[in-house]
Image 1 (cartoon, helix red, strand yellow):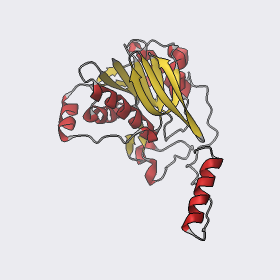
Image 2 (cartoon, one colour):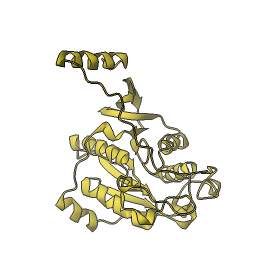
Image 3 (cartoon, one colour):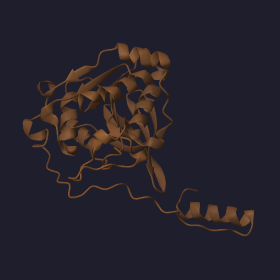
Image 4 (tube, helix red, strand yellow):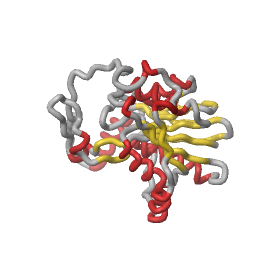
Amino acid sequence: MKIVVCIKQVPDTAGGVKFKPDGTLDRGAMLAIMNPDDKAGLEAALRIKDKDPENVTVTALTMGLPKADEVLREAMAMGADEGILITDRALGGADTWATSSTIAGALKKMDYDLIFTGRQAIDGDTAQVGPQIAEHLGIPVISYAKEVEIDGDYVHVQRQFDDGYMVIKSKMPCLITALSELNEPRYMTPGGIFDAYAKDITVLGRKDLDVDDSDIGLKGSPTMIAKASDRVAKGKGVMTIPDTPADAADYIVGVLKDKHVI
């Protein structure tokens, strides 16, 4: 079984977001990390590999600047078998459409049974790239995955909603977009780090992709960004002070029932 995990190197927004005068992210002024939802997808793939290490391979794939190989080596240090970096000046300035077209252009030349992406990236929050990749490839997509189980040629996915979940069964190949709540990603191991930096990264350029020029880079990006801003902080929510522990329990149960959680 061959699994490809699409990951992205993103600015670490935990320390605040910095913008250039033109309103775009100042990526050079921010630390870079692996996108959290993508890391959950990677962990899901690695857990599948853990159950059958002789027959499952995990490939980490990213599109970005040459320095994005750092996130691939992190993925390999966690347990991925290989890393593929898509990088070329011709691909710069890509929006979600051009990004998904480019990644799909690489995947068309690869063998895969299952593809994982994150639900969305913290530097964009569009949740568009994963489903668009599936559309370009003509395969099913299951988004907002909270649990994933393999059953022969099929995959069972628990798809999360605000007020419940649904279980979907799909024949592979298919694409799954993962929530960060899907699991708790493992740490890199010292041996894994040494091994990751001893391996070569496969680098793909424009000439290696099965994609039209009209669908890549800035020219292939129809999206126009009017304004970018930091994520709005959530409020404190509903505050209540029940008179007794029993009242508190009744209140919580009532809220959960209203939301169809129980």
